[in-house]
Length: 265
Image 1: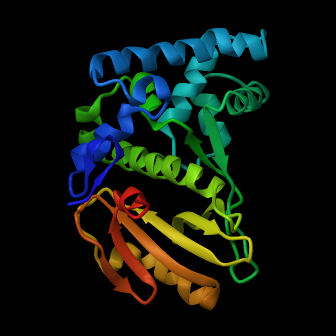
Image 2 (image 1 turned 180 degrees about the vertical axis):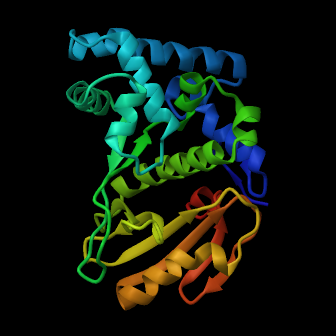
């Protein structure tokens, strides 16, 4: 089986969750001691909500900022109404908007815009909210790998956040100026986790699954998008935690998450 950076082998959900919680920041990426990594990540969160937040805007309340960041972490990779976050954090809308700007400036959070095309109607315009560093889910929500594995919703959110965090730096060096979006209709009947749009207008759709097996049903949203975009959609990919890559439908393939690395070597 293929091995990707950090020792993740395809076909092992536990390893993928461990890798997502390991951290990609230089100070933790090469640290072999899990206990020290957790301490460093917790200290990093403390610095963001106290020292770094004060340096950018000294009027920010660190207690409320931490609550807001915790609510953000619980909804990472989600298309969530802003009201849900600021009511959970017990702050008002204007304060929450300020927190969004602050955390984005500190490169802690990112908003993935919704994708639109005149070939589709009734698409949501809400962004997808993402932690830039997926490992911050651990200290912010007080969870470890075992807790993530027990909670299917959090597991899916963490893996999707992890995959997007791996895609982001690759796109910065691509010659075709690709950009990342998400797609979801207002009824919630169809959604695609990631839409990669290239400079010439072509797109690739990506779905992230925590399962080790993939069926045609798992690719139904990609099939729906392909049928409506025609040749503009050059391909679709279902990334999963199993060991094998295989075709699912015309121009749509399933592949291990580890192929993001092994295909680059």
